[in-house]
Image (cartoon, rainbow, N blue to C red; front, side, top):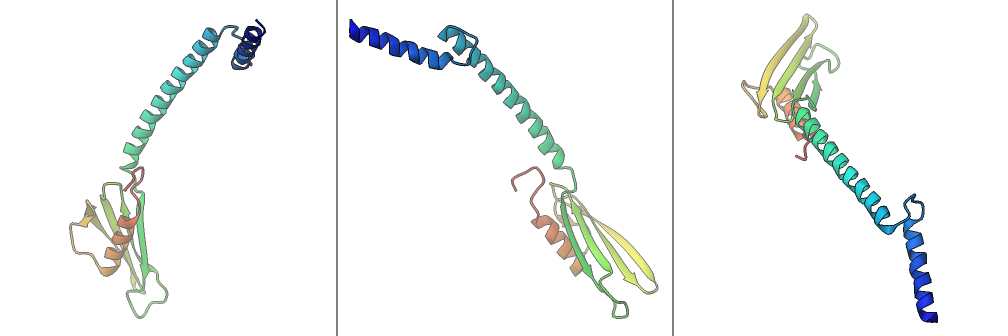
Length: 143
């Protein structure tokens, strides 16, 4: 009899520790409450995952891969005031803008980039800027 009383007390203490901090009195009510919370958390995680997928898809179209090369194309000008700037999205589409600075003026050129390749010939500096941009990680992706 004493052994049974001890077991009942131990079970009662374990039940008390499980239901501690809960307004519910029965183990079934506590488990039901926890299951409701778990279901809500699963629903919240699904919502966050769906929103993250939309954001990652949208990031593919942003200019997140950038390469910049500064250079001096002419002997008579000082400093590296000329540049080639490559701006690419996650698919490798975008453009390269080049600015050639000379004493007489500055010229600006733009060349389209599609899938990481130029539709026209690139100067060494433009090719380097493109290489730098392509080396950057894809925004919102794992590549």
